Length: 488
Image (tube, helix red, strand yellow):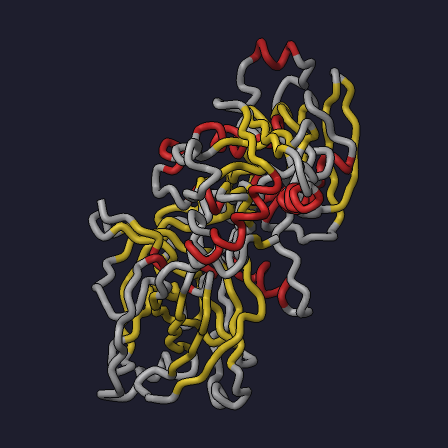
């Protein structure tokens, strides 16, 4: 299959000049976005990868800002806007971005560039069976309308492959054009969503719906973007009557909380592992974790928790604890997602590293694991994958990062260790290591004697002479053309 996340279609495409006027219905509502992208190299953390370009179609909003997908501008070095059917261009700044929700708000550096653009208003949310259009721009700036149908609405995965958000399933036949597939979904000349995924074989794709867009824009309006809240729990359905009886659950409804992050919204409100969550903010949950949405019908609780409230808004829970029902209250936040030992998303941020005599140490992130490709969970070192997958159990303290030996650069003192990689560092000279910063400081203080690195896997220990490490550091930097021996 040719399924792709649309904004990941790579390659710089030259956009032609105007061969005719833009369609009147699109005038003042669409612009082309051209982004220069250069991601950091997770395997060679001291450098970046080769640059490339991405093109997309941005939606001009009333007020002169442009809505785009986050993936179109992640790891950007430059972003520019171009008027359809015109040679007029302008640089743009990213004013707000959310990689989980795959949304970005751009602002032209020239405040007059979009003068005269009325912008496109935000329409109403769509339901299964609704008709809409996907708009594309021809090279000459004219508008191509593609008839679309909403096949489904529900909570699903976004490109980050981490967050579960509301998403539309869309059927549409899209001809291949020079822009990437970051395209507006339009109904009655108002924005109904943003296409972000497409399977050319089945002619089906996915789109970010209006409730997500409205949440993002409302949050970004004050200039202090906070993101979508999280609950910080894991849960299982309660369809099994034997399980319901065991946990003393009411006769119907609710899900069993199997894990509660004490730093998250739920944990701070007093919810505990083993509680039966019966309702959230007054919405009753069924045994599968669905609530009845006024627009979408039965919908996964993820939408109720992540899209409806905002960070800082009150959270209300009705639970059953060992057969006793009670109400708990708290405040929605993102601490369960942000305060973690192993960050999931790290775009636009250079990876940390420390080189010690040729040993290259890094802090584990989801971004590093994803560098192993589409099947990273199979291809990456399994010890690292397990730590990432089960970090709430294995690394619950966010201050205790996972420091690992990513590779060994050949040097006079590492010749016996060249085959080693993916080893989790536990201790240096008998003391636990909780971060690269701590590792670097302790190496710097070691003027003489041995540096004994202890790992969770074979060979268990590596020993370097501290004086020899100091002697070879400068040579290693020159031999491998490293801009620095560490980035912290």
